[in-house]
Image (cartoon, rainbow, N blue to C red; front, side, top):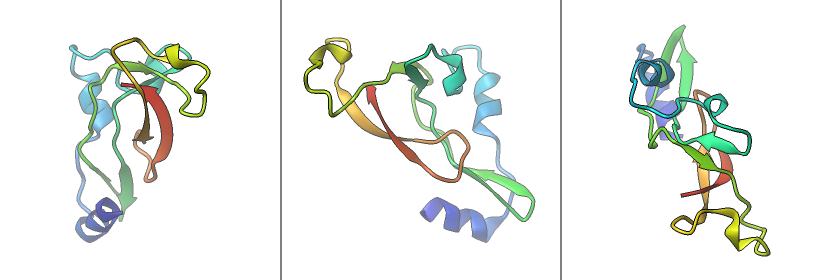
Amino acid sequence: MMFLLLVACTGSETPDPLETCQGDPDTECCEDADCEEGSFCWHTWQCATIGGALSCEEAIGDRSCHRECSLADTAAPDQCPTSEDCQAYEHAQGESFMTEIAGCF
């Protein structure tokens, strides 16, 4: 929410994190479509267009594909690799809103 308030006040164009990521050859993924089915790309950022200018927050994540999992499925403890746990995560890729998904981290 604070991001959207900041954007509304500034109205200035910021770099698009997707374009910045796609220009970096050392990434596994930049968006969910780059990952296999059942996985998502941990590259998260929000954007809003205010007064015709695209304003985006700085992206977070390791730009790697992570397996989706279910926090409610306690019958399947092997959903994630042994070194990772199923965790809730707020995810957006350029939208002005976040969705919550669960992934192996």
